[in-house]
Length: 166
Image (cartoon, rainbow, N blue to C red; front, side, top):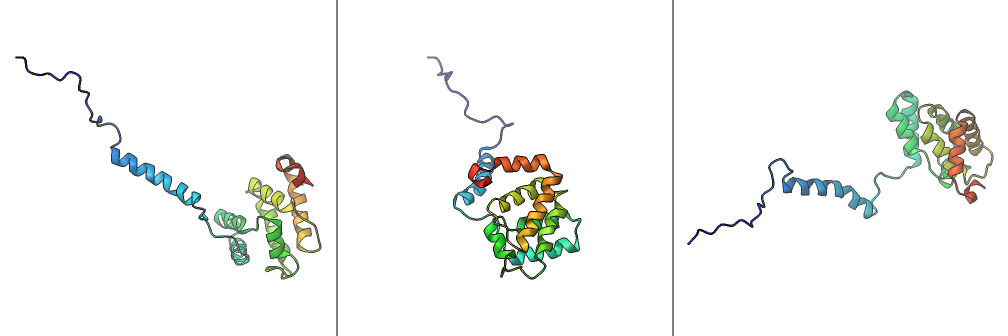
């Protein structure tokens, strides 16, 4: 009798140069965890409020060259015209006679944050109905942005739908 030889068996062990199975699973779970929180509808950051904008503006005035303060201010600025009016319009939370200072700060940030400021101005202005006081400041800043960054501004306007362009 010949000893049994098992020539059809394939080696099941992983070569030592590959990731261990446990590490690969851990990395997959680590990468999927943020996606699950997005799918659950949990906000990534708290909503902007007038108080946060006021604090961000104070920080920006104290350290105008700080990129962190500039970024924080842009994140705190209202993203819709309805919220913009709630902050700066007649009877708004920040309508204290200095509302144009908040809006003109966007003009000072446009040289370092061209894309962000342009996108913000176009989003705010697409539903705007210009009235006295704060909205006229917005119109002024938007016109200056369009003057300095004409091609980018035209490109942002072109991205709006026909109805949004008005």
